[in-house]
Length: 362
Image (cartoon, rainbow, N blue to C red; front, side):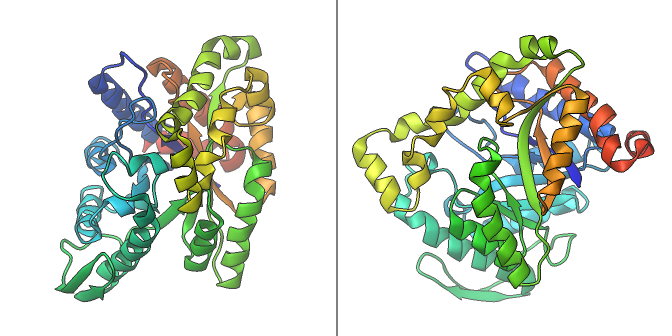
């Protein structure tokens, strides 16, 4: 199992965007020193509490100059809002600047992004499908043409060429069954939402596993959970309780832009029913104890978190646990503490005690 970090760049009111960005940069450097495998950053606009991560490729290009081994992954590029011919070149250049350490998540995007982006919601799925076709052509053909509904190009060559051949590894994620089916058929990695308990995720994950098996692929599920570790449970609660509540509230906050009954009907009709279901809002009503008991977060002593990771391994197909070490306005030192404690206590339990130390030395 790989161990990664996932970050949304949640930024509470009053937090300078400059400070937030550079704190994350320092946390990436620290994650590299600790021996984490990959750092994933969301691609998101417009809603500060949820995320200020408007250009993850730029962050990765900068972070690559300050790190030696950790890989970088966008989680996920919102394809309907991108020009796929241009995005292919941007991905390739970032792969060069990271010396082949880039991975790419490709998603349809959160429903609340389309209004501010001035794109009709009904175009999200067909634009997403066409963009995937084009990216696959761009990275596997010296020259390609495409005749779609939204994109029509003839004899296009994408430059520069990426370091990794034919392209950086692709991932996707989301809440719709069709996404899990497609990812399994293509052999892509699969992000699962960081907010939902396992009993909700199990059915779509099984769709992915079955599709992988039917098409000869090994499943690679990235399981995301906020994590906080200390030897003292009471100390943990004092240090993380408010940030944990904020994490859920900040994730749900953009839903406020979709609250009219007319908008909810549109969401259901156009393949975004999850956003009209009330599921995100319901998470904000959970108590701290419920969040911990339902394992929406892996919160506890090192021994407890190790047991939780062991149980996760038994579910099969989990290629990576991506911890969220910065969430809900958590102070920088607490994020560093989480990364340090996880690397010191949890990772060695699954890799052997020398691996993390050697990675830090390298």
